[in-house]
Length: 256
Image 1 (cartoon, rainbow, N blue to C red):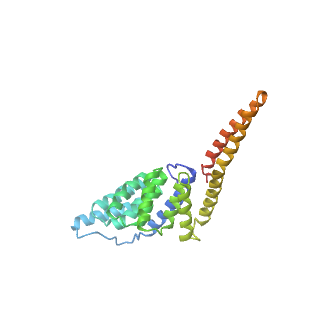
Image 2 (image 1 turned 45 degrees about the vertical axis):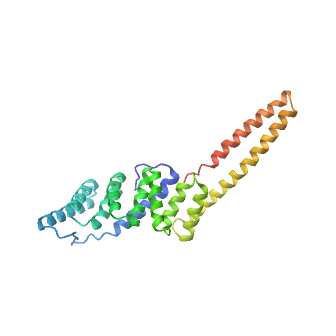
Image 3 (image 1 turned 90 degrees about the horizontal axis):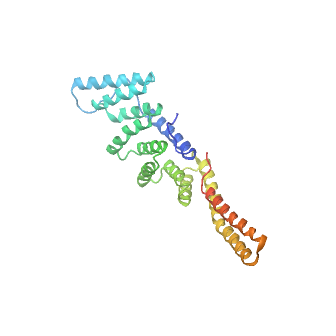
């Protein structure tokens, strides 16, 4: 699936994988049989209209016309067709066409009506993530974990989001993921992230000692040496800024 917009290669790849996974689950959960369900006791004319719209939507989806499929299916839902059956189809046609904002426009109102739908909440989080809505994605994932701390996929994605801003928090999420899914699809990636975080934190912890040592050397040279040797102090000062620059580099995750 082609994602319209990605915010970094580090976050986009797991987001796409999660999005594809959830899309597959949503698609498989729908049974497009010859006898579609209808919600409530509506008049026959309205029921027939909703069923016709639903079937037109299915036909448009089969031919690859995602926009027309979305329109027909949305009209069927508005006419009274059971949203629990039709919403997975609407989201699927939107996501397969990489129309993420349209999927979000359908999913979020439905989520407000069904706040306990954990799979949908995770799907909404991955859509936000793929669109670059980092704060919104984090909020949805945290909401999901408040209701179910055992959701390993949410733990993993929160670890990805926290790698740059909160390495310790990221480490905690990756460890929780591995505890919940030691042989999960992303277990190797989670272990790799933990190794990367450990290296970064080790270097960050060592950086102050290196800077202090360079600063002490510079001070001694400035107080005891003069003439041509004073240039060495300038070089030491330059090295100090190089150290700061390198330290900042360590804070940036490697792209994947």
